[in-house]
Length: 292
Image (tube, rainbow, N blue to C red; front, side):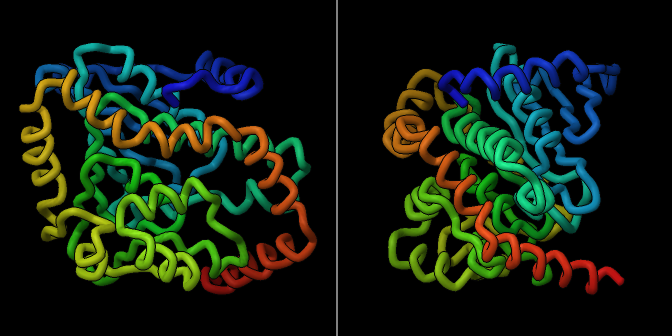
């Protein structure tokens, strides 16, 4: 997040930061060897690849969110990096989105801590001065879609088994207003209204048609395409591109920043409802049955 996090969230990040950051040399670069996020810097090119590695489905757990924000902050503070490619270390699943176990059967204090971390992730990505390119090499529902939507450019693998979208209503929950704002900015009001109400997930061709993604390429070309796109964006002077990005995005981000605490309280109140907990319980039970 370009703005300072709330004190409690900062303490979480600082505490986690003391436990993270082990590095090892890889191909002449320095690789951040965290548990759930692998960062492969290519300093000579001014680019780093951030790979989600949180099995089985790269869910956005509190631990993952903490590691991710710390890793991104390190890159933002290192002036040798100008761009980041976001992708999955597990082809077939980009990210399944928010971790439902963080939202089920826990206490209000935990819900509040978790939602602060989700806000932090979105604001950090959405307001980042870095060039962000999403190399979507798997399914990307809900929060996974949100991560992709924060990027400056989105490339998706052409595999009909992969789908992307904000499908929260199917789980009995509601995408918050800042998810909605980001989606509307990307595909327009009417398309977003329909997709959000129906919890629609789009295969690559449909996602491209609507503008959810910018390009669809064969699966084995996702990463090479991401690098070529990154080169196009790197050709633009940073100062002019960054000021333009801020001009386009600041109002949307400020809409959350000015009411972060209220948004947290709304989330805690909503997710604590018996009816919502019951919906999550039913959905989690369905997932168990699918796995068995």
